[in-house]
Every structure is written in structure tokens, then in C-alpha cells.
Image (cartoon, rainbow, N blue to C red; front, side, top):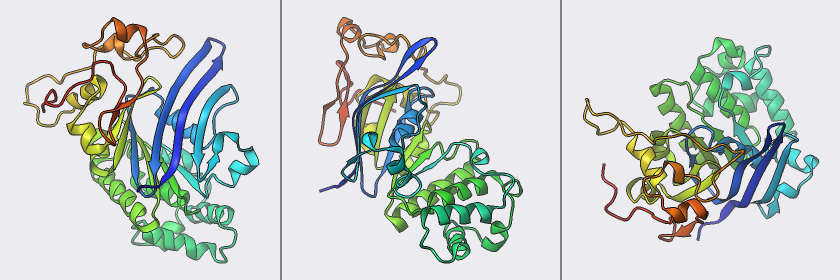
Length: 326
């Protein structure tokens, strides 16, 4: 029996702006189990990053949040800021998209690592020794040299590993990785993927991986949630999402991949754009771009329902087994 670490239930998020109220997340639910990698995928603007920020309660003041986010028996949304400070960086850490912006160019890597260690593990007597140990675990061959380097003296991949090291200083139970391989070359991406796998094995850390890179998802994730316009439209084991696809949007994402396509063939595309969060469709938010949409889809919002023990879809006209061919 798998033990849940994080349970997000009926999470809704609105931003109150001068333009109106933006309906950013609409009643989303998913679970992250202990020691698993859960992927959250979807095109840019679908709500992946704000879902992560909701978990660690780093949303702007113009936010209206409803629902619950259970972590170790606590509803994080009900905790005070002082209580959240005891969790952020210690029990839940986050790796941001751009490692350059998350590292201070004015201080050496070692200083930044030691500061994080002193903050997250005040009982550690020798912060430098702990920092060098972390650098060694993360695959740096010359940890002492890296310790004494400024961020700009390191490559993008090295900076990303430093950002991961800082996130690990509190030995978190949940690591949120927001597009951790963005702007990195293919070889460095593979190294980061391997590193995340090692972290899961060595520390028993659960990982929430936020990405639009389906190749990355296939290589590391145990389960996947597919997001569209602030909603979870499909969730299941990685194999089920890729080979037993049920939602037309998921199918469109997979069809747009260049793998196994003839050289001169045009890649299929999902026509249209994401709906505006200020005026989302009344029914299924994907109905305006979906070739299977009916009047029912335009009038009513579909809810997630199970098609197998681990696999759920929110669609009135889901694909059936055998409809998916690659």
C-alpha cells in the first residue's frame, strides 16, 4: 500500500487584477506518494508553476485560494507564515527554472551553501564539511574548487547542480523541480535526470517534476498529471499516459513529438490557443480546440473518473484502447 506524502484536493486559485478576476486553477486534485517522482505536464501557461507555488504558499497577495493541500497530516493552506517558514527549505524545497537567478553573483558558492545549511540545519557543527559532502554527492570532481568559485565561473549545468545542492541542504521530503533542464544542452539534461534519480534513491525524497518536456517525463516519472488551462485532465502511471492515452489533449501533446515521424512529414499540431483565464469556457476548457467536442462538452465541465486503478480522465468522449497509434 503506497503512502501519500502530499494530497492536493479541489484546489482553486484566482488572481484579482485590474483587468478582472483570473481563474488560474480550477478544482484540481492529485496525490504524490512517498519516494515517487510525479510529473506535472502541459503547455506554457496551463498552471503548473502556480500549482507548485501554492504548495509552498509563495503566492502574491492578490490571490484567492480554496481547497486543501495535505502534507504529513497538515493542511498547508491553513498554516501561518511562521509555520510555513519551518517547512520551506527543510521539509519542502524548490528548484527554480533559472539557476542563474536563484544564485547570488556577489557571493561564492560555498558561502551560499553554508548559509542555507545554517538556516535549514542549525544543529550542524561544520557547515563547510556538509557543503563539501553535498558537492561530492552531486558529482563535482573538485568540490573544494567549486566551493570557492563564484556562480559566473561555472557552466549552466554546474549552476543547476548548485541550486539542487542548496535545495537539499534541509534534506526535504518533497523536492519541487520547476523545469530543471530548461536552457541546458542534451548531455547536461541527461546528467540532471540521472542526478534526480540518485536523489530519490539516496535520500528517499519525493519529487514533483514540472515540465513540458515529455521525453524527460518518460525517463524519470512514476506517475503523470496532465494539465490544461488550470485543470487536471488526465492522471495515471507514466506507461498508461503514454501508451493508453485517454484524453484528446494528452494525445495531441504526444502526437506533436518528433519521434518516429518520417523526415518530410509535418508534425501534427493542436490548433488554437489556451483560453483566457479571465473568461474561460463554461464547459470543458479544451472544447474549443478538440475535434471530438460535442454540445455536452461546451455546456458542462467533465470531472475526473477512473478508467483503471491508477488512471483517471476528465472527458465526455475519451479515446479508447486501440485509438492511439504511434
